[in-house]
Amino acid sequence: MTVTAMIIEKGDHVATCLSKVKKGDKVKLMINGKTGKTIKANSAIPYIHKICISSISKGEHCMKYGLSIGIATKNIEVGDYIHVHNIESARGRGDLEV
Amino acid sequence: MKSKISTNKRLRKTWWGYPRENGDVGSRNYLLILSGTLYANPTCERVARTLRHSIAITHPLGRCQIAPDLERTFETLVGHGQNANAGAVIVIDHHREEGCTSDEIAHEIAKTGKRVEAINIRESGGAIESTAKATRIGMEMLRDLSTELRQEVPLSKLLLGLNCGTSDTTSGLSHNKATGWVTDNVIKAGGRALLAETTEMMGGEGVLADKCVKPQHGKRIWNMVQEMEDRILACGVDLRGSQPTGDNMEGGLTTIEEKSLGAIQKAGNAPIVDVIPWAKRASKKSGLHVMDTPGHGGESITGIAAGGSQVLIFSTGGGHTINHPLMNTIRITGNPLSAKLQRDTTDVEVTDIFEGTPIEVAGRRVYDEVIDVASGKMTKAEILHEDNAFAINRCGPSV
Image (cartoon, rainbow over all chains, first blue to last red; front, side):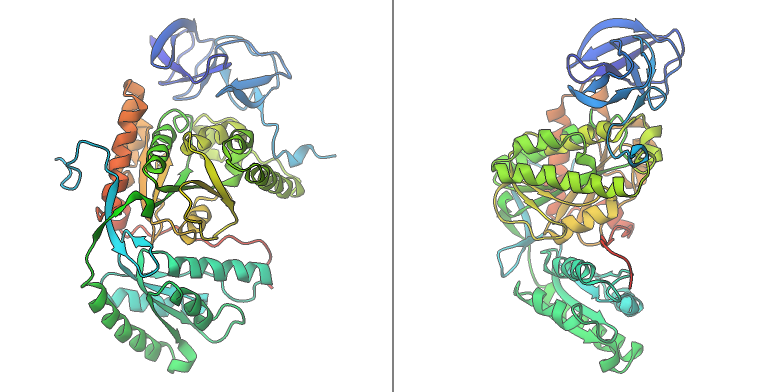
């Protein structure tokens, strides 16, 4: 099946999947109403969750809206599901205080 | 069926409201029965149940609060009494609370020129006597209010509130974008908009600070977000789970930064002309105003209503039942699933953005709804009495 995913800013690491994605599904990327390349999903992705469209190394900022939405806790490849299991917030982290 | 009010093809620059003596204009002409303290709540509710076109605002505060907190309660109650959607006000309190009595609240509200009466339960001879007294006064007030007619006024008389809630990844892509388009066009027509939710500026504060006309306002945005983050850090816990909430994460939002960057889309491209504290009255300057409120929806929109907003766009990913009792709350969503599941409280859908409808087309639909609701069209929640969102923000303990 082919699913559409929306990119917000050129250079973002993520796109939002507009429907539920199954492992192996083709994900067609869209930016500003224009369709671009298609990538393959490496795992299932729930409705309106994010897919990685350009790889991120552990410790690197994950970009969306052209700005950081958090830090990668592991290496993330194109087609991977992106959420709380591999990105963490850099803000309001009272649990990390010394 | 086509709306009876919106017949113009061009973007409307006027709306129909109730002009007040102080120059403000209401989108409603309610008699407000305002409770000064929690022990007056049942009396207020009895009176409002009896009187058609009256609404009660009740709350659990007004007593045994430390000074800055009591002041916050006082200002919030005064702000609601002063809000132009209240045509007349009856304030009811129980006994005496220094700094927050019905007399003191009524005194501030009277400065707007609208009719206001203060009723003390004890001095009136108890719960039943005060109910009778307030009901009789209210009946006469409503007779007068019912003779007032709406007049055509410019958009400069509108303070459009902006808030989002139960956000998900569709928020920053659809309904907040459409809201931003409305913000820009209301301001272009000489109006004002009020953005809030300090927690949801975390990660996007630089974007907002850059929109400020005056550098000191930009600095204030950085500072208020920092103060909010310091309060969170002082709790010694991870913010995740509280912000983003469980339903935000279920909706695909991973971090507060991501939620914030979606939330601030409501600001559009308009210049920020002022930054104000919780529940303070917004100035008359055309442009975008920012209020320091928590992300808690009920508290945030209560601050916005106290700031003088008559109509609010509440944009939601998951769908929402939120509604302020006095300020018209228009719920919009771009999430197709939520539009279906929460259809009873969704006023405008912008789900077609995901089918390629341009933001300006969807935004226009929301803009028209704002003008219509400001001019008298009822929201779904208003019809359903879904008056759940009056919540006073606190900064200290009960004492």
